[in-house]
Image 1: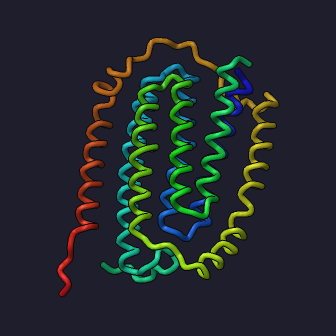
Image 2 (image 1 turned 180 degrees about the vertical axis):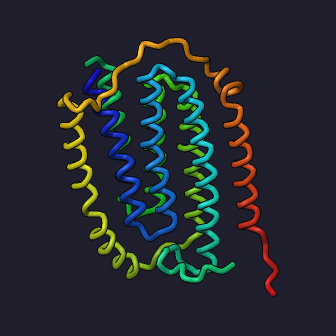
Image 3 (image 1 turned 30 degrees about the horizontal axis):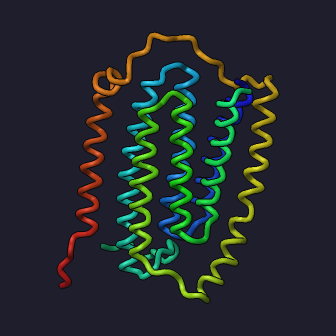
Length: 102
Length: 170
């Protein structure tokens, strides 16, 4: 089992790093959503793995479902903000967001 | 290693590849589809890790709903012109070239640290078997979570309504 456990931990770590790398490098608002989602996948995998190791599958499933619901709310609101920003500035580039007014 | 272990390894590799592709892909629609692929792989992995309810939610919500939302948002924007795109490709390539090397280095170092066995990082299986069932956990032990989810969903709906409300141009 050890190589599989190692693979799961490494895969989760690499997916989280990929998401954070996207967040640090991107200048596109929609790619920010993608970066957050990618990082969340790694966290979900780690949570599920923790439940598997601990034997407490059901508590972990409840946590993952809560996380997924929050993920959806974040994605929907962020997409809405991105669309409004695009309508206002004609661009999704975060460097052009210099005027934080309504 | 049995067939399930091998399948799990393939799924983990696929999930990582889709995640990296979602970040590196130039086309946003293709990036959103890669993200959906990553979610689908994660859903199958969750089934292997004895979390079927979480897998169902992951597949239907993350792989389905979030992809639809992302692609809808993309469809409301216009693509770059050819010149702008060529300029962006060069800049993007310079910014993202480090990602594969970072992943390779972190993967090798973490793999060495975990497989070496002397760091104490590797978790061990628990034999405990007196945990509450999923139904008890969700509806009795984590009632506050359910309430929080409902409030967050309502907050999300409210935020979207406010964002897309027609404004009177004064």
